[in-house]
Length: 229
Image (cartoon, rainbow, N blue to C red; front, side, top):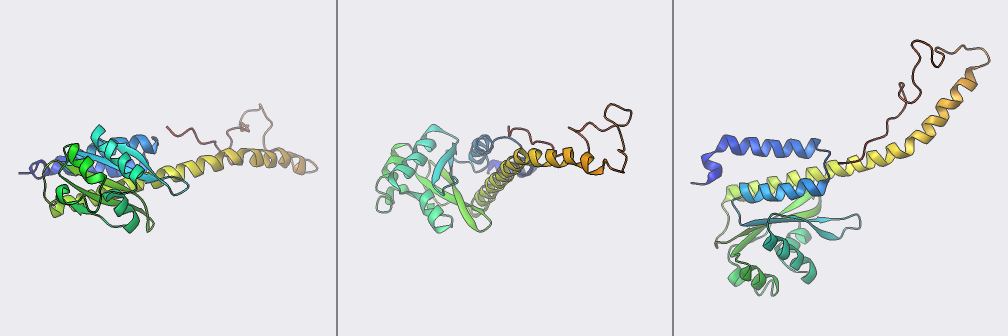
C-alpha cells in the first residue's frame, strides 16, 4: 500500500499547506522551490526530484533538487541540451520513460548517466504559467516501470503549485519595484498641496498639533514594500 493511500488526511493537509504557501509566502522563490522539491520526493515516493525554471531571458536554469544525484542530472540536461525535462519544456507536455535502459537512443548522454546514478525510470511535469511553459519538474525512480496515474496527476499538481509560487514572487517583485519608484512623486505632490491651498483654505491640522497626521505615515502616503525574504 502506498504511503499516500495509507495516510490520506496527512497527504491532503500537506498539499493544502503547499498550495497556501505558494499563494501567500514572502520567502524567496528559490527557497520555496528547494523545499518543494524535497516534498515532491516524499509525496511522489521518488528517489529524487529536481526543478528547472526560466529566467528573465527565457533561459532554463536549475533552481532546486532534493538530492545531489538529481541535481547533477538536472545540470547534465542543461549542459548537454538533452533529457526528459528539456523535452517537457519544449513540448509543454509531461514525459515518461519507464525504463532508462532503453532510452540511450533519445538521450545518449543523459540515459547512461542516470543509470550510473542508480536511477531506472524518470517522468516529468511541465510548469505552466498563463499558457506558457516556464519550467519543469523531474521525478527520478530506482525501479523501472511507468508511474501510476494518480502519481502522474499529483506530479502535475505539484508542478502547478511551483508555477503559482513563481507567479506570486514575480508579482511581489514588480510591486516592490513600483513601491520604490512611487514615494518620490507622491512626496512631491504632498509637499505641493499646502502651497496650493494656502491662499484661502485653512489647513486641517498643523504638524505637531493634536490629531495631526505624520506626513510619512498618513493616509494616501505610499508605504515602501519590505525586502522579499
